[in-house]
Length: 232
Ligand code: SF4
Image (cartoon, rainbow, N blue to C red; front, top):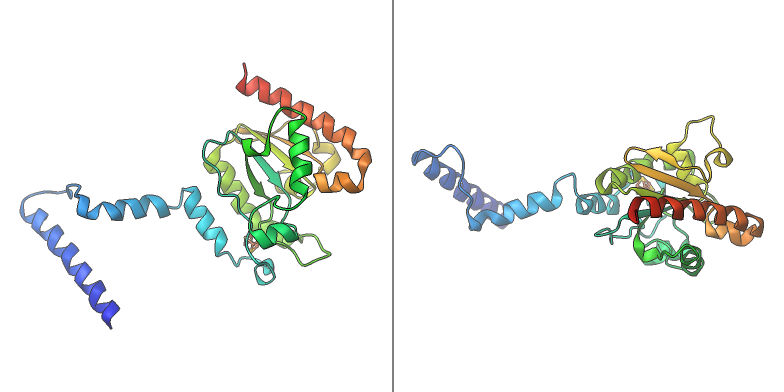
């Protein structure tokens, strides 16, 4: 009841404010600092900001993983990042802490990036699927499909020139049905204003050391593109 009363009072204040300016002959409302909080909120929660996207993902229940996750996994450090890194899906540590590459695999990733003179801090880091699947299984097709809108929106908002994508899940979002991981791996893949290099995930490399050489080839391609785009 008290809430209703407060809502009604605010409505009446705004109505009187608009009527007052209409009576003075204004067709637009002059900016007033008493109402600047409305503009701030509009800016913060307008549909086209990263904050609004984070808010939406943090409450998302668009697939069945929402019932088994602890947190959707997000790295909110997107400002001043020229590069994007896409992992595949959260592991147990990510699910526990709420941000990607939070467990021991982050050291392997960091060493990979150091080898081409970059650091993971140079990247906005995200995942193709934001919530952890139950132990022992990969994200299913319907879960990848439900979640891909968030990744595509991150790319649309941040417009990274270069993206490094790790693992078998990210290519599924971009490639045509007939294409395979091997056919897209290592070759610059164009998506909107971005070039994407797909390569193996570091956790796959730990189980299959033979792919280390292929990852190194892909990282060198990424480094070449980086130098062409940022150091020329
Ligand atoms: S995996 Fe993606 S679509 Fe599914 S609940 Fe999490 S955020 Fe939503």
